[in-house]
Image 1 (cartoon, rainbow, N blue to C red):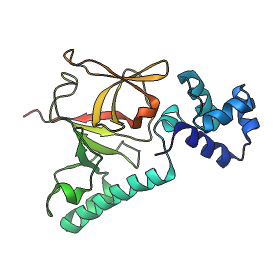
Image 2: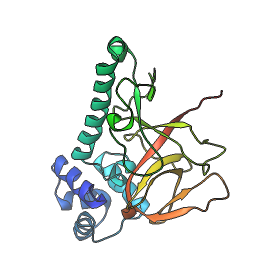
Image 3: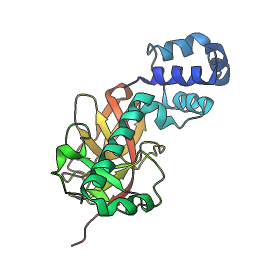
Image 4: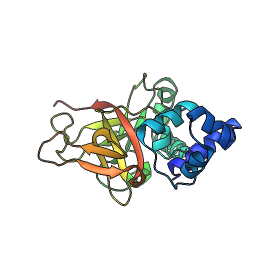
Length: 228
């Protein structure tokens, strides 16, 4: 995973900008930009938004540590999952071309999203969300909720659809991977240089972490729930 500074530097170089050119766009000194790129200076949210605007990306892109290798891993995982469906359910091949399927690839309990074949035996495919025609993120995936920390907004057993390429919005649910910890679904807010992850259930206390403690942070855009 790339640091915020590494992502900023990569985007700057991709635009063909010098450190001085980016500094001018921000109204900052070249020394400040250099320190940020080398992870020697923390970035406040307002400044992060200025960096994102200058570089033409949403702030979430910088926070998530986005890089080409990570994107390729996600795309490879989704391709692998769809390949398994095609291999085990030949009759679904035509549908795959007409209807978007969002794979349920893990739980919000612990660990990173795992490959489909590690979760289910060959021939199973109910862990795919069918007919999601208005989710345009090619890297969209789904996770199943465990626990009651998000009740009554999200219930134990609900499936949430996550879009890595969408922008984060304060006060909205996200799925986050905390460094050295578990994958968790919480309400996202910012407080100065920190990220606040809050449960809906008042029995649980908010978790406050620095941006450098977050491995990835993606918005939840939809919930799928069985009512029977």
